[in-house]
Length: 267
Image (cartoon, rainbow, N blue to C red; front, side, top):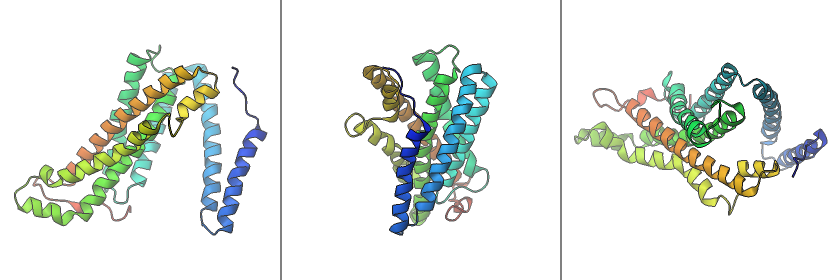
């Protein structure tokens, strides 16, 4: 089956539905109509620019251009992780923690998938690298942001419990172990829910895109399984790295709880 090309009129019909939703928001005084229109406009501009950039990358397959784009993707994802936390780490730690965790998990798993599983030649073929890395970064970003937010927020709320445990002779890892476990579980819940409902409640985005593009449904299902498993591994490893490093940052070399290293309410 050939790919059906979309015209500006086709996209305009879909955009009209978003405008209708914004109008309903204004009539019901929900206060999100403006944000909805801004988000729709941003997504339009961003995706159109991305489409033109990818067209150039696909034509040239330049390692340096691809590396530049992946670094931009990582930088933006790192900022989003920091912005989603109610109590973020002060200074460079606030940005570096999530960014480094995503780099160590998403980039490593993407490289493994390209060289060992899919076996693309060259491994930096943008047709495979950019979509895989984008899906991994997007989902890993959400998992790490949730895990870090739970870690810092619960540490702040349970500071008296942690300090009491330290006074009773526990080391910093024992004093915060229950909070770390809860943070890690929370970071993995989104991908667990996605895997649990895939194929029954929801038809995942990659599989849908491949089917619409004309790929055989069974092959699309195989690729979707690959992506789900990679995302699960990336979210788990990324959250584990971020939570471990973040919890260590919350204590100094004398094993004292250092809440002064957190900003107040995301400031």
